[in-house]
Length: 338
Ligand SMILES: Nc1nc2c(ncn2[C@@H]2O[C@H](COP(=O)(O)OP(=O)(O)OP(=O)(O)O)[C@@H](O)[C@H]2O)c(=O)[nH]1
Ligand SMILES: [Mg+2]
Image 1: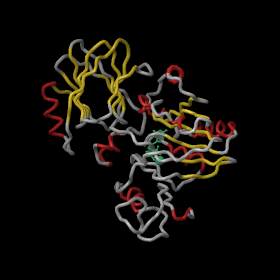
Image 2: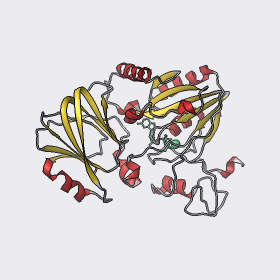
Image 3: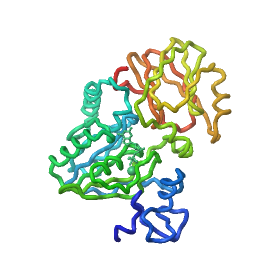
C-alpha cells in the first residue's frame, strides 16, 4: 500500500466507503482523514478507535516505553517485554515540565529506579525528560544513535507524548499530537539517521477521562504547563470537589491534601454531606457515582486520579472519595517530596 493512502495525521488507512469508520475521506487524494481534519480545524472529535494489541516487534529493536509523569502509578504495569524478550527496553518518563520547578528530579529518578528493580523489570535505561524541551530532544537523539539498533518503537498509553517525540526526532510535521486520547490510529514511521523510528497507537487504559467525558471537556482538565500545587487544610466534615468529577473528604485525623492538577481545573470547598448532591447537579454526562475509601499509611502518599493528575497527603488517615464508577484511582507512595 502506498504511503499516500494513509492519513498523515493518525496513520489510518484512507477509505471512502464507511463514514463512521476510521480513515474515512471523501476522496483518496486527501492527506488527512475526515476525523483528523475536523480535529485540526474545528477542534471536533469524531471517530477514533482504540487498537487492542501491539504489532509484532522485531528482535533488533529499541522499545521505548513512554509514560507521563501524570501516569506514574502505571509506569511498569504493561509487561511489554513479553512481546519481544530480545529487544532493548527504555522507560521514558515524559512531561516532567509539568512538575513544579524545584521538584528534585534526581530523587524522583532514584525512586523510579528502585521501583523497577524491586519489580524485576528488565530495562536498558530510565529517562526523565520533556518532549517540549529541545535540549532533552537533542540528548535523546544522541542517546538513541549510540545504541546502534535499526528500529526504535515508541509505545505507551494514550496521551503520553509518543507522537510528539516521534515528530521531534524525525522532523515529520504532518502527524498530529493533541490531547485527543487515542489519536494515533496506526503505526507512523520515518527514518532518522540509520534508524527507523516508529510511533505506535496508544495502549488503551481503562478508567481514564476520555471514557467518561467528551473531548472538549477533558482536554481542558489535562494540564499543559507547569502545575502549581494547591494546598487545602481540611477538618472533618469538609470536602473538596474537583470540577464535576470527584469529591474528597476524610474522617478521623485531619489531612492537608496538595492537589497537582492543571490550572484550569476548578476546586471548591464544601461540606461532606453535600458532595454527592453537588456532583450530580454539576454533572453534564450523567455519571454513576460511588464512594471509595482509602486507608492512608504513614508517610507521604499519592492518590492518582486517572490521567488528570494526583493528590499528595501525609498519612496516617482515612480518605473518602466520591468518584464516577470505573474511574481509575489508585493509592501509592508519593514518588517525590512536595
Ligand atoms: N507539557 C508537555 N506536554 C506534552 C509533552 N509531550 C507531549 N505533550 C502534549 O501531550 C498531548 C498528547 O501528546 P501526543 O504526542 O499526541 O501523545 P500520544 O502518546 O501520541 O497519544 P496517542 O496517539 O493518543 O496515543 C499533546 O497535547 C502534546 O502537546 C511534554 O513533554 N510536555
Ligand atoms: Mg500519538
